[in-house]
Image (cartoon, rainbow, N blue to C red):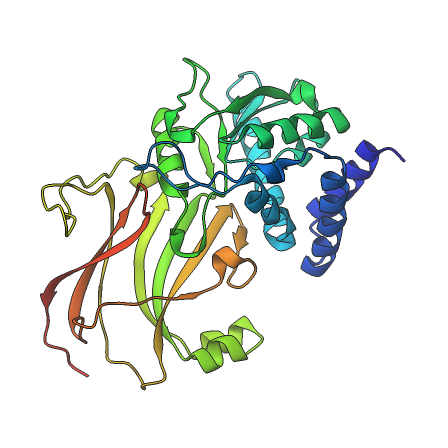
Length: 353
């Protein structure tokens, strides 16, 4: 059996709704092993983790990015989401009497382009086109070799080596779908928000995968949060404070140029998107701590749930000591070299317990 035939068989198993999550994990493990074994480019030599412009987003080295492929649950959920998005775009174009070819743009693909490129094996070249972008030339070389190994070159429009924020779509070549995962838990450290905002402003009709990313704060007892095995059990011990930031198509243009200033340089404006406001409650007990949750709605009914990947694993969130119960806190999201949430006390309400 050829590598391409094996790849198609595994993809069909992963896309089969009758397969359990655990079975899909198993098939994805096999797919990742098959896919990565076809690459012999030594991308570990490239250790670059920051662009030339210090004001732009930090980036992962190719070796760091390669590890993302081994999050099997995350990988197959993205593959399922992209498959459904392609079908939706094809149906929409067919109903409109348009050319049914679907164009996909994949920035921050890493050395394996695992979230999109393997799926291209199930489509004919006249039905699907993909453009691949990464900052690292070693990653692009690796992806080229994978295309050679699995005979996918005729599905690829462009292999682009560039800083994502410096790249603009050619005129009249906006993609139908933009898929990426350039993030860590809490949307900190990496530039998913700024990069996807940059591209979506150029292609406002494109489908984003993930469609929606939600950050929320909850008070949790670490003993239960990390000690219990099942999500339903953990949820009964959590106290929700609400959503603090949402990133989707609706808020890509809502830049807040005057929201807040840096401490050291008050004349400098931070590059922020608006978040949401919460009121701090009393802690149920001294054992409870503040946790930041990251929720990913990928596409349609495909979600990445808590603890299914490092991105969706809750992380401790620290507020300064001067925040007290009853304080109203307005959040914004800072883009640039230090991406992440920024809290700001707005006013204090009398807290009624």
